[in-house]
Length: 483
Length: 93
Image (cartoon, helix red, strand yellow):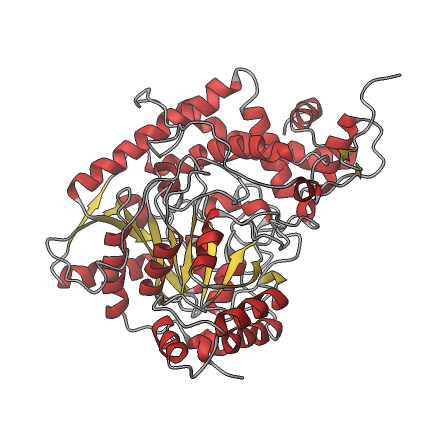
């Protein structure tokens, strides 16, 4: 089997430019790798569509766009016209998207080739991808371990080299947490940076689409491609900048903060020690690193639950068996259609969250819970903004521990929230946040570093991330050739 | 544990039918989640500004900006007759 996919995007581009390979070679290689993989990373593989597009691109002049002809995998909650969009739920098992999401328009304009749709937690609710109706994807570093979630299929497919790049979505850590568990680079951009048009809504004030890649540079490159003002998403902002511009540039007068909470007892000692090694690396290179306290930083699980479940219950009210998706056959009344469609169409995790969310928003409860959560959320964002008055970036672990055994989480209602305890702040405040691999634990599982930036300051995150990437010894590419 | 009546009330709000045999599990699971979110009642010392969305321009003019044709709109409808979506009878004859 050819191995072009394991080359860097720049190297692949040169081969395409020199006509040594065509996009068809890349697509064939991806399809072969996906079909021979046992990771369960994909829900839908679009062989026919991808090959057709590759053939069309092969007839064209290769543009100077580095992403031209590059295959990409898309999380199955992002609409690609004509392809199934299941959200890994029985509810949407037979649903076909009838339009392209905003980011998919851009992916296609760049001449990228969509290979298929990746596995995930049902409606992006979970932290292991085990709530998928199609079964859990497996972690390429150890197939008995979870990939993390909810973008677990995208993470596994990039980590294992089935595709060079993927898109995920992140509502409370769903790009960064699986990126950490599988040793890849994942970015949740600033809220509003990437259009949410065509992303199946989970919690609208938190959801954000972002790139998942093998290295920092390619991550910035993909973010360049998918960021554009989109009038179809009223939270989208005008964005026209090169996110690679600070990569490999010197870190001058750089100050970084580590919240004490991020290295407290909730974090596993191997993970903590790795983060402290990174602190030392930065200090040795004249970066000032301080430990700081941030008010309300330890309250995010409660806040997240209230806001995310409340918004989810409202967004998922649309699944009623009438207009699309699963529909309970032979109902006795309209109410019977609704409640039985939702009983059989949704899995346990989703049902629990919708029920709690419905309760939170009903009557006076909206004041007691939701409104108060929004007030503390505002406070939390201000507290983070104050940190950015004095520091360029905030760093810490992405996850408190490395990937754990499939099945360990069981049906625990709280576990998936606790897994994301260090990554939810960025969603609460709208801040950009990246996870990158920085080492391994004693089981040879990847450890992720999280870098949080000020609003709209992804470029500085990539700057620091590229510096760290260059200065660590570990190699995270070994699983790309199959362990 | 929540009472059976509390669980049934919440399930009705969410329009999700629950079987008798599932009740006990939900009495337990929902209690765990409610205990976690109830912690917000103990929080004080914060400003009273609310943040509905992290972005500044969350309000925009309504405009028609999506073009989807009729056939496509009906593509995923579970039950239809011609151009109509079929639903259970709502009004007694």
